[in-house]
Image (cartoon, rainbow, N blue to C red; front, side, top):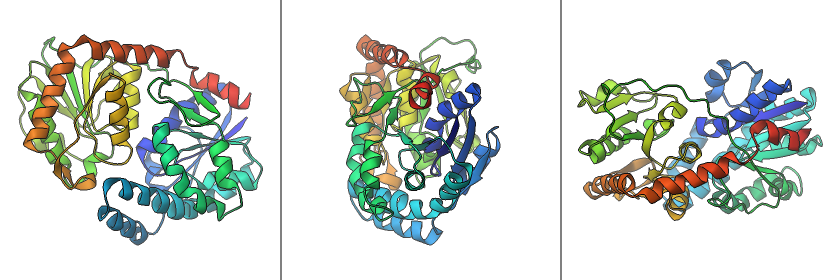
Length: 381
């Protein structure tokens, strides 16, 4: 089987495709990945063939971002989806995905939720397609109507066929009920390694602080990380802060023995030992923690993170602390009350067994879904 994978530029949008890409490769399927230039370093480090598509003009994206910043959080997200991912992203990537569908002739197209050009190309060439969730189903269902006019401009009924296509998600059904008629759930096969003993043999609970792979580029990122460190620094715990590659751990200065700051550590290695994850509620971190049975404290900043935080808190597998500092979105900061609230939430999760028990129940639910390889058997034989 030939499978074409398509992604937008964000690492958080590409990584949900990786288990399926790896499963295809292990089965001996032919794989081709199409993505924007920003992902080329990631794709070049992998073994699968890839093609680089286009990106919208920087001035056009800057204009959309500026307009979004002047709106409320929800309206800003809606604008970025309809204009950034929808109109601009589809037009920029369509020549590459169209060429791949025409010349390479895949048997199946798998695209992450917000990559739409591959849907247009697949529809034009009669190729089955399915979308791989990078967000909770309820968030995606709210944003779907925003791109309907964009897609139908390329061909009548394309938007409807996108909504009717198979929807593939890693989140458990009890936490994230799907609004889509054809939904397939799957799980990743984690293979964690040992975490280095940066704490000299200490055995206190480990609290992992992370804002994912992209938030480190925010203008307020350093302050956000310092706020998280302050929130848990006085607790009787070990702390591991991962900053991502946009910030230098050395910029945070000397830390006490129970605190370690690193740019990056494999998530599965940390989750093997963590007692609590404090994060911004990104879908990748939320899924990884719950799949490992680790409760969370979510501090949502933008995009789908508030919805993920509500789901985590609502299902009893963690808590949510919505920042009150700054304007929100890319300018968010943590107030003193936020810092105290985060620390209190971590303490509560560490002392009340129900959070860990609920996270463990969700992990069991995830384990009972098909593997990525099993899902491919359902989709393509």
